[in-house]
Length: 316
Image 1: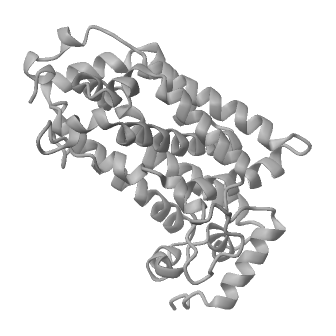
Image 2: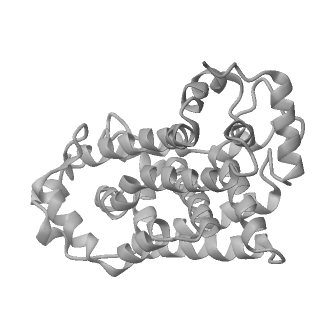
């Protein structure tokens, strides 16, 4: 028997549950400011500065340095969300937890198919969006010669040499450990939030730079900009046009962005596991630590030219 469509009354009950748990429907100013600090950190990294200056080799390097993170992130998201749902479904049904995620409006009918499969379905649906971002990254890598086929994900010979070299680099290993090896539920969810902030910050830096357009314009390199576009100004959806926070969301249209959902999940885990500890303090500490690790990876240099075919570095 199929689960009936979620009705407005249920959405209102879900909002009550969100309020009872002290969760968010809009990002508070202190978290928006934290995302801005992350952007500043990433803006200072060599690869981001290079891309903003329109340097092609910086874009090549960028796509290779963070490939390991982008490749594994959808699976990491599914793992962390499933772990969260398995734990908190003891007190809240999968259906109620779905309402905490605020999948409503246009998302309502499509998400119900996932709900039929319970926790696994919700987790996989949540990770689906990250999978589409992975596809955009593959197109980017293929366009600069690191990947031979964006559909299969097969690396080019030059790209395989470069990725193999990077996988052994200490800054890249450290970055991977922070995101994919964290076992504490709250800290793993903080890492997911940090990734959202980092992706948005980098995309805003690159797209807002006039010099970077030579990389993407048809009259320039013509490199696909999809990955950057999908993350560009993601924070705008938190703010109304008059600059005020929307504290009375329309239940028929509300669909929380991932950064807000991530925060709600990590807050629930924090309350359960770290009673008496101030969340904002530890959140700022860990998010900034992750951002600095990503910026350090973005500063990493090695003898790329020796591991790459010359045609890759001068691709036009």
